[in-house]
Image 1 (cartoon, rainbow, N blue to C red):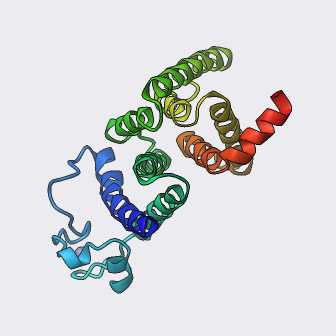
Image 2 (image 1 turned 90 degrees about the horizontal axis):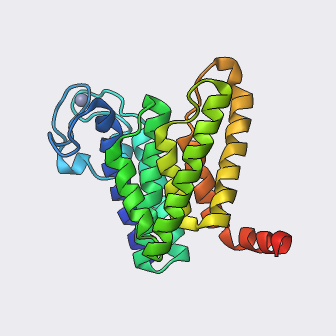
Length: 241
Ligand SMILES: [Zn+2]
């Protein structure tokens, strides 16, 4: 029951974040004007704005001008629903709500970073605030600051060595979120995983000369580490006592 409700809530959160993903990089308000078709500007009726279902019933086309509506919209909604359901299986509802929102915001940040090379504060700061609330507040803040500091130092070091700016300032903020959500040892695992994933991606896409955004990898590292925290913690215990 709770899981189902969380799934529905995830759909709605995804639907709202779709608007944020499109509007924030353009410096537009998330609230005004109300949702409209990007091609013909016709305001959407409420029944054209139901997460997932409207896109399916309209078969991915605007009801007025028949312009294609990106599949990114239903995919984002589905992904957020999936994230909310997964955390609801693990956590009591209040914690699940906070974690679901954090992961959904990170997903939105990943899409914006990937597509627009931008990191809107309107998404990153709420995610950080929620991360501080995700467990014991004092500990979360402490681990968050520790990871932010560590990442800032790492960035300075790598930038000095390579003589160009390594990573973005926003990556420091994401590192703080990682520390706050899963703590020190799991946080290091998450960042290591992110680096390995990024290396693979760099290897496969390096010929295309695209600058790889790091936020999608950090977010993925955190989400996977969170989901598998029990076996990962056991492994850490076995190796490091
Ligand atoms: Zn239209």
